[in-house]
Amino acid sequence: MSERTEALRKRADRCAEEIRKHREIHVVSHIDADGLTSAGIICTALERGGFEYTTRFVKQLDEAALDAIADENPELVIFTDLGSGMCEPIKSRGIRAVISDHHQPQGDLEFHLNPHLIGANGSYELSGSGSTYLLASALGKNRDLSALAIVGAVGDMQHLKMGQLVGINREILEEGVEGGNLQFKKDLTLFGKQTRPIFKLLQYSSDPYLPGLTGDEEACIEFLHTLNLRFSQEERWRRWIDLEPPEKQKIVSGLIQYCLKAGIPSYRIERLVGEVYILEKEREGTEMRDASEYSTLLNATARYDHAEIGLAVCMGDREEAYEDARKLLAEHRQNLVNGLVYVKEKGIIQLENIQYFDAGSNIKETIVGIIAGMSSTIVENRNLPIIAFANTDGGIKVSARGTQDLIRRGVNLSEAMSKVSAEVGGAGGGHDIAAGATIPEGTKEEFARKLDLFIGEQLQKKANSGKN
Ligand code: C5P
Ligand code: C5P
Ligand code: ZN
Image 1 (cartoon, rainbow, N blue to C red):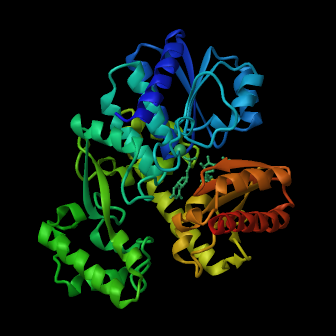
Image 2 (cartoon, rainbow, N blue to C red):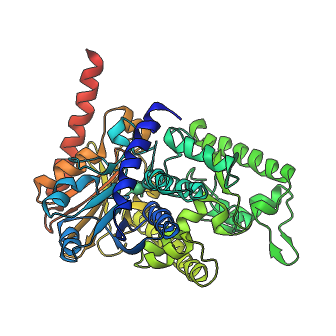
Image 3 (cartoon, rainbow, N blue to C red):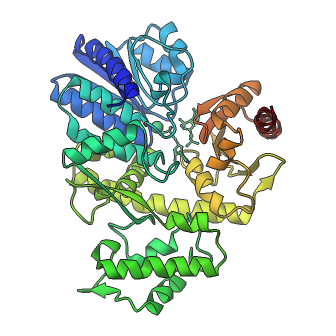
């Protein structure tokens, strides 16, 4: 165990000690895959420890959400995958709290678990589910929950930074492998290897975008035909997991050739193959077997007001809740496709240092961030952060997505969203590479202008510091 992990485990021990003083716990978590897996981890650990618990899922932990929680005067609240940005407001309301999070902290409080506090980066070295796994480990024997911790990290795309999970995430992965819960290997990175017909993997490939294949079912089928692949067996489409190793190799080589011919830069082509994470205890051919498919299944529940379904799946339901989740997943997929088509048709506005699109009410605000991230594959200029606006109750939701390259050049979207949204009367935060905010109606243009300047300053500052 590294020194940093040890420091974090000590914090986890103190948090666990605090939890043990109580019987009834209120768990508050975030409505995405990382938030759901975090809740799944802590609720399972609480159940095993004989605690009573209730849950609440929020889009974001703002003042109003905290007021509602404080009103109920819970004995103890465990905040997972959120809370770190609200330490002062939590304290000022007298809420007894343990925070297990990975977002950029603002302020501090006594029982607070967050990688940033020990000098680790919460955008790729530990997720909310990872923090919460450390907490669960301090509460009892919960090593099997490492699998959920990795699903949360992958849901937050923490494996993309280095092409594999690193830092404390890696230590958790290793625990999972030792316990027989997880496995990792190099494989095709395209989405859907467990559950989808092979041509769908190509058809929905967005990273890398495959010009001539992405979005075109017929072309994908034709491409596979030219490789002489058998498509179906026993009346059903073959999936990636049904293929023999030489067949997989044939597709990977064929795709690489195709991309080279299409002039796709090699750093993008390389992303076709990468580290993938398998949940060893899950049935093959189900979403839960693959960390990436699992996280999408969870997003399909919580981001549509059905966190209880995703939580039940995290806690082991493979019957009713799983069936419900799959129905939601089909709708979610369709919404993502429609959203991308919308962005493509509507176009993206470029300023000097950012680019943005306004989804209005055409894209649900809870998934507009995912679409902003996916739209990086359809924009002309990948060197500008992508900002998305969407209507929300009583305001405007903003989502921002950047790239590793931008971060190296000084961009920090968390700082930018937090500062600039405050200037127009809103609030925001998140991570350097992905952040969000809510701003008042009528401030969109002003916000975009100010954000453009602010990002310009971040870039300038870094460029200047490089000169010295
Ligand atoms: O609230 P939370 O921290 O869980 O959300 C992080 C968000 O950042 C996720 O929606 C994830 O998809 C996004 N992200 C991204 N690109 C990365 C890392 C994270 O879009 N490289
Ligand atoms: O909603 P979206 O996926 O764009 O969120 C990206 C990141 O920004 C998440 O980590 C989320 O928790 C954070 N965020 C925030 N404040 C908001 C909206 C999002 O800190 N008002
Ligand atoms: Zn998270």
